[in-house]
Length: 415
Image 1: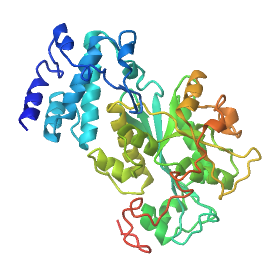
Image 2: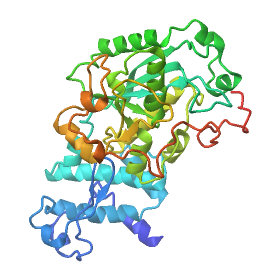
Image 3: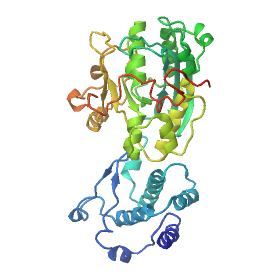
Image 4: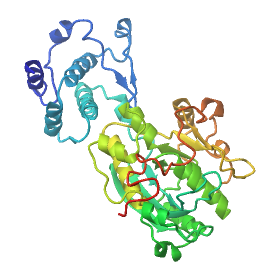
């Protein structure tokens, strides 16, 4: 405890966890301490430090990186109260688990130190440059307690979207509409209890083709369909794009929209950045020290909370990238038993980035995503989601972690 307090006292000496100036300090550091700070990419993946012989010739040979390594070691020894104290002094958010607080403080200190030394942080300089906007979507669809996922035809009944500016780090606009289902015009009690959507909300709502047209007009009015605008969809899981939108377009006989052919699955981004297992929305919020705001499984409220997680990741230094895509049969046929969502690896993404094809804006394109907006991406490089860690084809309504309002297998809690 005495050692931790001593470290805590040393850290804020010059306001930015400064160790003090002077070359002698670096010369007296032993070899284990002089390893440079770990290089952290935009998703929070840490690369091991280069070998000692590389230090003199690498771009990390500047003394500031040795200093950062020592600072990171000191930050690792701070307890939660000390971490929060340092974050508070720097007007940074103090919510979240200990590892979240450590990463937040390290990221801030790294940026400050590199700026002071004239060595701009290359990771930080590219941060938020992948996309100007995230389009956070969370559909709600018709469902039945006893549905067979391979035969039941889900129809979208709520279409919400939150527009997040990555530069401002906030929601700047939103789109919302209920949708009238045609195959299952009467909502089940299970569906109403789960989503909070009542029959009267959908009875006089527009049909899906009408809502899709309104939504794409909304995108165009805000310049989001321009080839100059870097925008991507962001979802909580693969189901919104890979199942609900895919199936709805098939039912309605409309082309699958180009803007939905690749997206950020925030569950993958979150676990990569924070080195956790995949979490549902509620658990991601809890990990960040946040609470769900609104009604769970309301599409509008879900999308707002997903956006809150994305914004928190941005502020903590994550640069989120597309990590999933949809593969559509060239003949346009639909098979609910078929897995249509594939991973986009970092290698694939670098190819897309080089082609400057971060988002496809060809309206009403019904070609496969590989042809329209993933040119230069090889399916052989993508995880085809058939391994043990893959998401299920459909969200499981019996999963209490996924649906925390489920009282038992048959009854949903009235909200």
